[in-house]
Image (tube, rainbow, N blue to C red; front, side, top):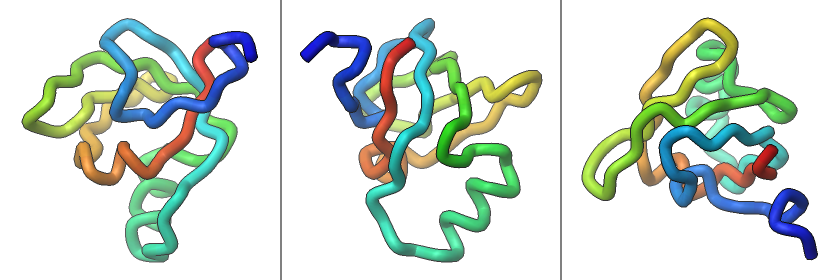
Length: 81
C-alpha cells in the first residue's frame, strides 16, 4: 500500500506534515463535539505544527491553530497528503 494511502495515527505525524482526518476511533461524544467545535472533523485537512512525546499536538486547520491532547490524537486516523 502506498504511504500516502496508509492510515496513520495523528499522534505519529511529524511537524510539517499535512493529512486528512478519516476516522475517530473513540466514542466519547463530548470529546467528538469539542473537536467538531474546534473545526476537527472527518474530512478536515490538518497540518502538524508541533508534536513531541510529552504534550499536546499543535495543529493548523485552515487559519485556526488548536492543541489536541496526545492521547486523543492516538485515536484519530489520518491519511498523509
